[in-house]
Structures are given as C-alpha cells and as structure tokens.
Length: 131
Image (cartoon, rainbow, N blue to C red; front, side, top):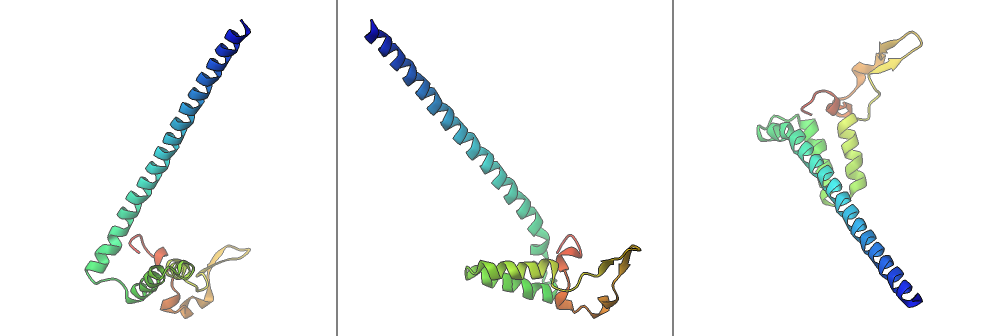
C-alpha cells in the first residue's frame, strides 16, 4: 500500500512539474511577444519620424551645417565608434552653446550673449519638428 501511495504522489509531482513547465513556456512566449510588440512600435515610430529628414535629403534642401554633423554621426557609426557617434549626435541635437534662456530670481530673461552663438553651436533639433 505504501508503494501505491508513493507512486500516486510521484505521479502528482510529475504532473505539477509538467504544468509548471508549461506555465514557464507560456510566460516566456508572452514576454517575447510583449518585447516584439515594443520593438515593432519603436520601428514604426522611427520610420515615421525620419520621413521629413529623408524628404529634405532627397530635395537637397537640408542645412549644410546639419548635413555635416549628420555625416559625422554616420561615419563614426559605420566605423563602430559608437561613443563618438553618440557625442556627435548630442552635438547635432542640442548643440554645445550656452542655452539662450536664463533664470533669475525675477524670472526668465533673454541671455545677453545669444547673438554671439555661432551657427555650429546651435541646437538644430530643438528648432522645429522636421529637424
């Protein structure tokens, strides 16, 4: 009789382990699907956001300074120098000039040195939606 009980317990344990394995597989599949959906959404958003840039490139109407900076990003990325590519991207997106706005105790005011900002220091990405 104890052998029969042991067999029954063993069978129940095997069934539980099988169900746990099935649950783990389902969780893995669900996690994969969630990750896949997020990646697909990122791809769709990127493809939508790059269309205005591609249009400017095709029409040869992209600002030369932006084009030069974008070229540097691409060269570094092609050479797998991703740190420098990231630095050039940051330079392209927010620039390296002092920000044209300041904050004082009185309130927000225009900075006095704004007119001295060179075109290569401008934060082009912040100018409009297309850049």
